[in-house]
Image 1 (cartoon, helix red, strand yellow):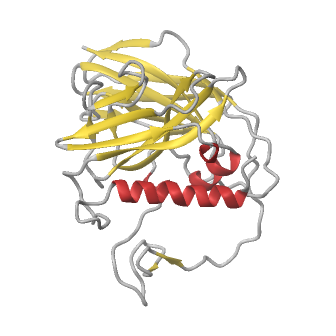
Image 2 (spheres, one colour; image 1 turned 90 degrees about the vertical axis):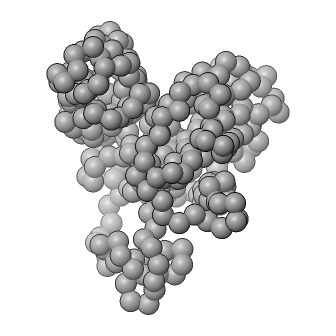
Length: 307
């Protein structure tokens, strides 16, 4: 079982790997770029399955603060060994997106690596997934990385991932410019329980350069330098404040240009969520619904053909 202290060390190591992989040729960490940068694939860790197989979990770091990139499956976006398409995204939202997809490997996978390769221009980045014990995922790791509102203690609270399904067919045909209804059915075990603590004065936050970060996100007295964003504030998939169980709709494959969700993040009420999406351009898209209990994620996909 992964301890809370080990989870924190592991989280720091993943952050360091992302930082080093995203550094410029000079070896220094990048500045703030709105566009023109590449995407770094990230191996988040592995999970055990009841049948003896394992699941490799990946995310990514789009080094751009604004530009979203599309990398079709192929030489610029592939996983090996196996077929190049193993369910990875082809659309990449800005900055750090964690626990984005999973790939199951057999029980005899052994010491091999599962390698995800992304190429943007002449920059090639690889993430190496392995079954080293240090990379095993557990409750502590998810809580530490996802900013859980539950307590992080050495006695983890039981928590099962939410279950999600999309009623009806898994493929939808719609007309460009016309809203289409999205619906999902979600169940959960009610965990994690929210933290219950008396209100306290906000802690002083500092960025990596030692600058004091004010509530508005700007450096305060005693420090200078740009605002630093943590993974939670960068994440597209996250619940709104005060929502214990929610669904986030994302474009998983296909460009987001001209795509609009009337509610991208929706609280689950009575086990069902609904939203509308409009596509301005014809094409084939994969829309993914992430069910989120604040710590663990599950998802379901809808392929949308836009005429």
